[in-house]
Image (tube, rainbow, N blue to C red; front, side, top):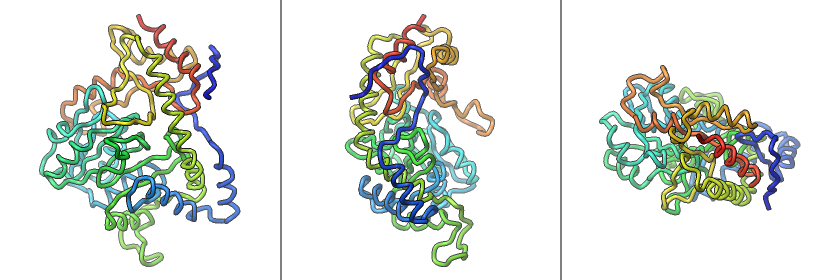
Length: 372
């Protein structure tokens, strides 16, 4: 049972890593084996993902962004190509497009789920569209059947950014295992963590082989013989050891994240002016971050002032993701008023599996007390 103690003055961080059992033992095992760079734990973690996702190929990488980058490179994304990304969400997919010389094209999101839809994607597609990257924000999952249908009409590749939605499902299918490829992140706040790390899964054997080439300096058939200008995107055996231990604890992590989600839902009932992200009936979410969108009539101080007021009560929160329209690195961004509105008004509340019910009650009580 989760602890319910509620200390009124303790600091509640936005996220906190949780180690559940075998992490230290597996790291020691990796150290003693002398396999600290590549090694058996990397292969073991990849096999765990293959079995879990039900796909034939998995490639462990150094982080969630290099997971995306490796797919872009394997697909040959480059100048003249367009990559469709949502205008609300973490912008790694857009940044990788810029790294490759491609153009990120931003679509709207649903104002309630904060995820892209097939209609949003179709509105911005052009003959130059080479890749669609649905971002499953906060543990939600985009309407993948719509997106896959739109992509099929134009023969466009779909890469799911499932960094925030590991273990969430859409119509019974795991996020990240629905598109042509899926990218995951193991950064410290994610559902399972290796500190930094990531994974790509796919059913496409040729794509997997080409990703392996770019992951390791462009060398595949001969050592020190570079077939392409590759990178070092490899995950270490030490990190993979932590990942294997985390994966073993996934049933418990899943249970505790669902408890946190249920407790927030109960505590936020009746709080007018703060509306939680909507999860449609087709989505079975494993919550990564609890977020609400505020009504500025109820919170006239605005989101940023509200965050400061929460911090004064020793509760750390985070803003919604800033839209590309406010950043100079993105050029000629089309109109995305829904994304801009959501970005301005979303506040993300502390979310991690060891967060107690008492802490959640305190967080929600503080939020209610700041309503004008």
